[in-house]
Length: 557
View 1 (cartoon, rainbow, N blue to C red):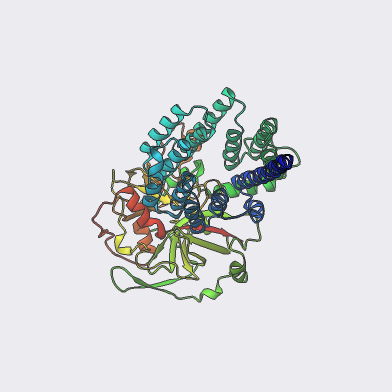
View 2: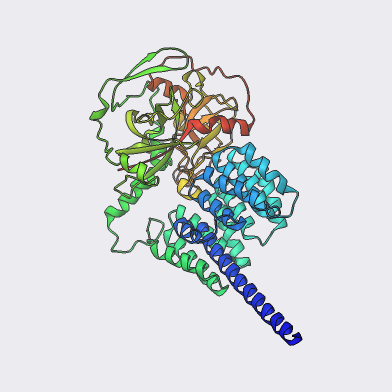
């Protein structure tokens, strides 16, 4: 009997050991799958991540966090927030990741106060200090507190010298707010100091791609893949190699152009580059000849505007809008596939704009929608519509878009009685979607500066100069003061290199806006252009106020 008991104990221990081994292996397998899913999310391959997550219990903390990250990546921020909130209730100990995720979701929705509220508990802990600080830096940059963001990122970089995310955070600050070339130089210096930082190689490659240097981007991705492979991160290496293989080499006049590149391709690339609306030497020459009289207005459709009151104007299009060639057969596809884009050509252009009147019209730059037949808009709070070009003035570079679906209400538009021309030295806050293919286009960003001059290049009376940062994608976005009054529309940036070559001088970083009175003119209004708003807003409140009014524009054929 005694021997039998010992034998029973032996089998019991063996059974427990086998069960422990089985569950350990299962747990290890789940951890590996979650790790792979998170890597796919990091590189934007969310479909593959979700395919992995479908076969994993979705009610445990780590799975919920991964689901949240996936939906955060594809822009479904409310859904992401729900997963992060569920994660908090699924765990009593590991809730830092969840609060971090909720803060990021609120940041992407544009509710910056709520983002700060959720990130604040993590500030006093040592849990993921770099990610926490980067969220705060993002809040400061989106609301135009550039100096505060710079102090914070420099302090973070000093404390975390070898952290790749801190290095990338500072490079991002330089690229967006100071000089893109300084960002490139900084990253190249970091790589010289330490070659085993593949994430920095990838980010430098992304910047090179935005600058049009696709061949250098491809090389950097290959380098990063090689490093990851040596470090044992085979999946990261595989994804980067696949991405690099899809990058097509491009050429421009600053590169060696091989004999098989046709001249017409070069001309096409130059035409596309001009869509960034940089002021080159020829434009400077033309601006010297600006006439003081009212410019000749070129109309695509005539407007009949009746002023009804100080807020709403009755815009009547005399010509039937159906006469404008616009393919809308794709509209039904939108309900089937949220990410469906109806463009048949590869030449797609991005810009910014803002809602006016009753939320049925948008003002933007003419060059944003020039030679396009399909125009889509999305507001900062996610409302979407297709649009038709209702009117344009090529000389001033303004256009009015008529939206197929009304997207704004009375609190989500710029009213014409809040237009006011700029005054020297006043605040000039540019809000729009700079570099959307690099930074994303879910939310606009604010850059701060002042009105430097109330006329443009060559004393062009329609324009004015600002010190606020303007990048490709900002074109057509509103320029406001601290009250939220519209003082202008972002037009473009000075090409300092071209000015140096043509005029032998290097100007300070100046950018160009169109005076808001020009928007009044194309609306047929002869008001005094005096803003009725009196209260100055802090930057966060101003951002949340403007968020639904500013639109991202994507146009093509």
